[in-house]
Length: 428
Image 1 (spheres, rainbow, N blue to C red):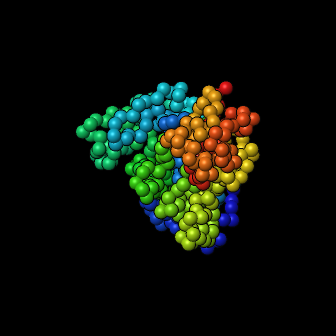
Image 2: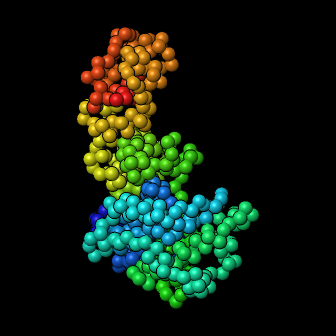
Image 3: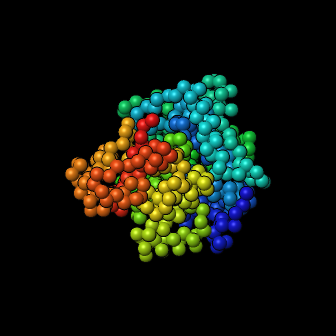
């Protein structure tokens, strides 16, 4: 798998491109990392623990970086932690709740499927999915303590920031030992697949460097590692979170429309960083988008470009086109009839969807949907020409809606003015 855009326009090496994008926060040996990345094809791995039924946009940094390295000619091992997912990396706040093994196994399968669209499983640098349960399950307690545990100085493990934060409140041996399991993953992947490189998020720096050191202590290597930065938002809120919760990659948990809207609504202060982190456009294209966005911020060109690219990557061309169509149609710039029931419902849910057993008049619909606080205000909005049903202006204060106007037999799109809209779903 190769792509002429990586490195972009041929003017940078892969390492230079990664650094320009801000994707290398720390590395074990910058010179050796450059030699590995800019040399021949290397095998690398990145891990994903199944702590939920889906990956979320917080994982996109690692997923996109894995894709980026494969496009440049390197070979990815995508590790899904069937073993480590049963334990959980220590949190600073409190002990994790342990999920039953059968639940974790189900999540492993789902996450494997979610990773599939991002990489290629064909070619000379074909990606491979691996599960650390394959080598961890066969380890006895004695073998684990003797062959793995003896290589880890406890004083170094205690120096980890997250461990220090938990010493007073308490940390179980289960979570304390997580670092050993992750380090052993690197050794096993090096032994079994010739893996030379691991990368992950900056919160994994301690675990990752422990793995590099462990491979060396076992007389193997050399191996390298780097970590990507923590993705933040300028307004101080957590990246990947909305009022409705996490933004998931699974379309059953976060609709493609909501996923598209998440990127479309990115803050101007954040979007240029997001383009560098997540987009596969060339450096020249990104710099041009940054320039145009600075000159015309109201056009939200960078947000639209990023939303379309990532929605296509995660959900496919058809769902991206539906998300764009819905975004336009809800504001009267396209046909509502062209939207699938799933996309329409997802869009109205994001706006605020009210469920009714019967249809009141238009004034009542405006009030029930929350677009106006009272019937008096509803009638005023209608009389002034500011009320719309399915993008058609309503001017009669006592107007009603015929059942045949229901979209897909059950939905109405209400709008007040140009930007405020809501949805109604008639219960059947």
